[in-house]
Image (cartoon, rainbow, N blue to C red; front, side, top):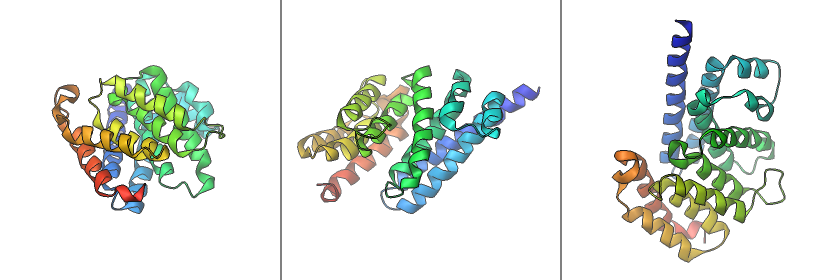
Amino acid sequence: MVLRINSVTCNLLATTSFLYCAYGLFVEDENNEYAISLYKVGTEYGMRALKVNNSKFRKAMEDGMLVPDAAKYLTKDDMKALTWAGLNLAKRCTLQLDRMELITDLQDAVALIKRSIEFDPKYAWGAPWMAMGIVYAVIPPYCDLGGGAEPSRNAFASGNKARNGEFGVCDMFAARYLATLLKDERWYDELNNRVIEMDPCKLDGGQCVVNELAKQKARYNMEHKERWF
């Protein structure tokens, strides 16, 4: 009975983490600080879910182990929580790149996202790969986290393959982060226009809202192109 209650609680917490991430993506273009606060709360819900669901991970964290080391205790049963905790944390860090003290948080995010990819590289429409594409695009290649244009390109490509190119958020963020890093205006336009013109309901049998969000953000990209070029 206790295990069942913990499972339900974990699922609710992980779902809440996902919702905060989705809302953060929705508002970040117009209200950066609010999005940061949403991603922070989303991370907290995801981490709470992991501690409820996985006693070994909880014990490791209570003993002062760092997340990259404690991640080895996470299992496939933790997929939902670790994925959205990682994505929330990664997105928050990419919006606060001027704060060098957040490098530890970024290391935590990468550890969680890589663990998710290890268990299922196609999970959440390939969103973990997409997150790695963003991270690699915004950190320099000489960082220990392995950033740079080529790792970013490979990560976005892997995310795209997860749903045969139907996950529009992946292309939209590839335009926002990688195409701008490369100063490739033509590719930027191609990626955004592809998302704008795509059928949003081809994703996983009708998850239209995810791609509708991508379409909205792709339009924003095109309307505010001068911000990045």
